[in-house]
Image 1 (cartoon, helix red, strand yellow):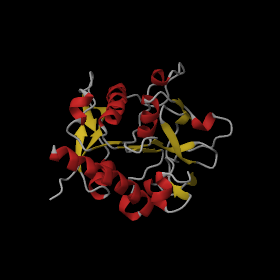
Image 2: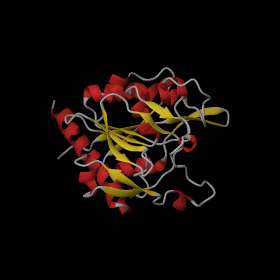
Image 3: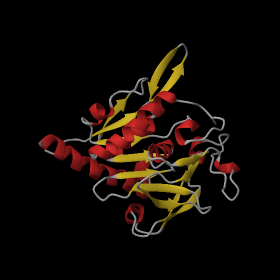
Image 4: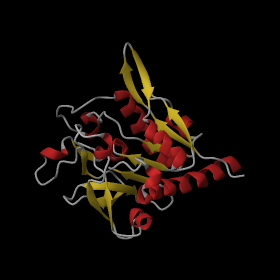
Length: 252
């Protein structure tokens, strides 16, 4: 019987009352179970961080989730003011996990903040406020709307010809939700564009290495994943890579 893949999800460090807690959104956990058929393993974001090689050596995949916090700008060479909530413990954990996951061949799926973490970990830069950049649209959700409206389809994305997302969707365009204030300014090393928004903003990237699975998207495919064939296809592609690693890891 094939082993069930173990997928790590780095937690956010959140202050609740007088104590710090480690938290992961349930929709991401459910997407790992329902969309990828894998077993979620929550990874604490501690300061100092856990040893990335020790953590990843026991995992078959890594899911970098979205979050309310933003990466501190000093990580991508920006000396401007920080925008939004901070989570330096998560920054330290994820920015160390990503290059190690690539080295070890651990499949990576990154969502929203996760895409930005991948880009920064590989030397790329971010727009701290996409909506303030001339020529770019406002990609934020309306927080006054019900959650179902916030996560509803918001705009199309153009999918790169011959890319992974084009193969998953079966076409060159898909419609996605949009709930982010920051975005990619310049690409990190080894990344290629998988999707762009109508305003030209990069909406998805992958690692340019056929031997490594790393896909990062700016939208939220975890939202009602089993109801959306495109979103489900993303998790199924990730799951296939995780199963391959699980079989290889357990046979050694």
